[in-house]
Image (cartoon, rainbow, N blue to C red; front, side, top):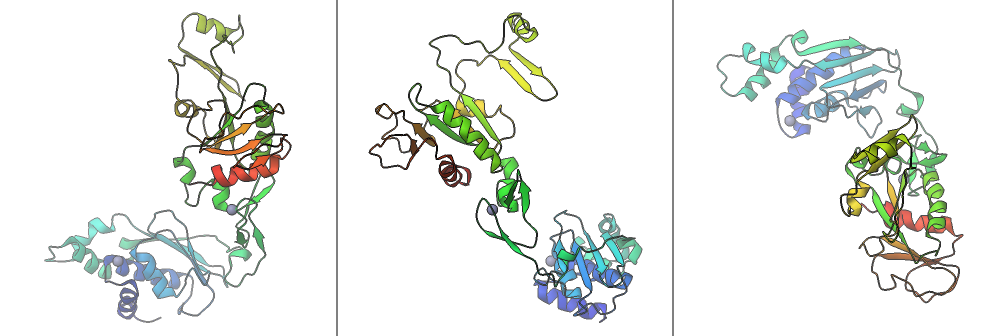
Length: 360
Ligand SMILES: [Zn+2]
Ligand SMILES: [Zn+2]
């Protein structure tokens, strides 16, 4: 292997500047290669490196080893740790090299007369003993065949977005083959946790078939991998009781509890004051983890909606509503939006995926 100074010079040139990360990364890579018995990593084709950081040092590891994402010899694990695991795929020797957290605090002890802490780090990392900088742990790690550089595998198509997926990155959700972004609900990791569920109103006159449509959409969307919740808007023309008189929860409420939760190992039911009229967003925020909320009613809300029209050629409620995505009706209507037969659930679900679920 070339000298430390040589490698550092080259790695700083590739990285774009000379920094403490380059010093640390070059040393880390040199230690890793040595420990797995690879003297000249460049072009050796048997080294695979798993890096756990996306910092300056990552570029140094790449520069020293010649491993890269494109060659499939550099693997990125987004752990935010200053560590890399070096694997000799021929001998199966593997070590994880972790930069010690206290190395930074120790750095000033190794240099004299250095006012700038960054410069002190840069200088100290060159000369600090290896065991002050790194902890090196042998690991038992076999790179799976499909992760090896030369692997060729089938490409499959994502059942939701239709895009091609390489080499077993697809996931199975409820019997469907999906790409990772479609399965997790967004292109970025954790995207799902930050997004609120999509809301789709199913509107229409009384007895138009709203509940029947919702009953068919729930399994269709669930089978496509989405978690579906529903909300039913009940007008206050006549009172409705969801809790049965005489039950324990009913008695709790009768005694004046503002909220009562009924918890079983499989279900959670809540009875609570609606404190006047809760907004749809407030209601949806109580529903737990969900991808889409199908709301029966609330037709005046300015949100994506589908109107169900019964056979009787009623005048549509939302004919001029810009949020109307489609009509569901067995009879012909003059419309500017798509019309679906009540039995055409799959094409309707396709439209919902396109117009509601996949809108970022
Ligand atoms: Zn840097
Ligand atoms: Zn996809």
